[in-house]
Length: 204
Image (cartoon, rainbow, N blue to C red; front, side):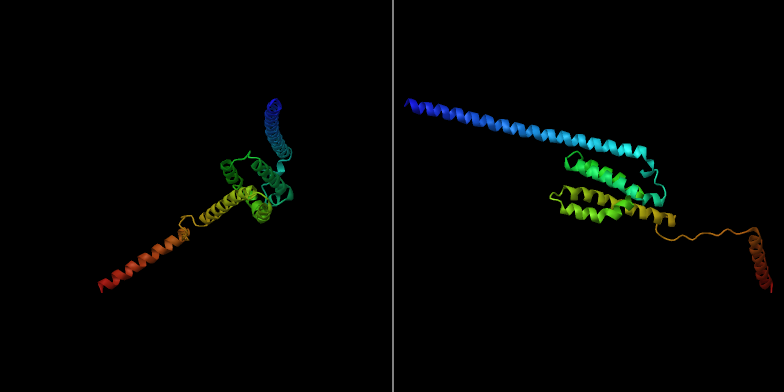
């Protein structure tokens, strides 16, 4: 009977020790996950600082610097945009970039013609790459950017059509050509001559 009580006591102590060990392991995993998130967050901030420093040191690759069409089509300009998208994708993966903010950022991104040209050239390749990923998070971010690309492209085409048709209703307007002073005098003389002929025939 005494040995049975001792065995039960050791069993209870063993269960308590096993539970404590499980709690300790779970807590260490939570701490490790938080540490990894902090390290990833710091890495994202370091990449962001490097991108900002690169643009300040080399303003030619920025949107203001790449004013000509050749500059917008240069490899340096496209590499800069590719680095920014990769940075946003990295933030998206760790949850540092929310969908609502990603939509606003994609809308601002597609406002520049050079950025739309870059996305038009790389959109299909990025879609294939996103579909090959094990997670659908890459594809979702691509869908957000591609939707804003389509919207911005339609707005750009509509603005170009509005410039061709000033009345804005899509119909071609008829412009009034300027008439010179000599042409006005000639038209007036013809009108007076026609009136005189009409009166002559009326008298007869």
